[in-house]
Length: 161
Image 1 (spheres, rainbow, N blue to C red):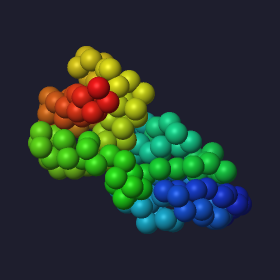
Image 2 (cartoon, rainbow, N blue to C red):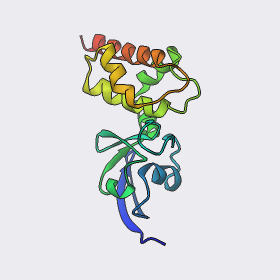
Image 3 (spheres, rainbow, N blue to C red):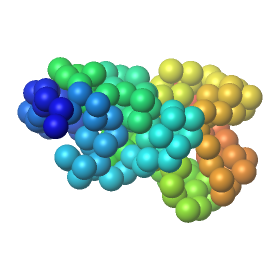
Image 4 (cartoon, one colour):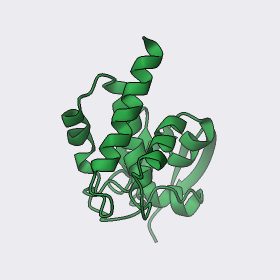
């Protein structure tokens, strides 16, 4: 059995001190040790984006990031963002625009969309498409997802004008 390494990580505002195998991926730690099932395991190669979480303010692929890399860090998952209301407008837009069907990719899409609307509030439709291009959706064809994100960009812009 591999040696366990102690980590201290703040997840959705709560600090956890745990011991993990050095090869444990962040998404596995979140799902198995903390019972946070919102981030999904898809390809396990960092390609599909279903495992996307936020680490120290930036989105990362949870299947490529090791839990030990989060030691001392801040992690936000879809559960934390949902509870805080941070992405309520994005969630509402996804429902209104039918931008989710099976829901498997939705948490990763919302994580990517959150970062986009915060970092590029003037993003064009083409920039939205480019930004989410690393997140696969096999159900919606992306049009509705792009519509939802663009509607939130527009709403937020109007609210600040």
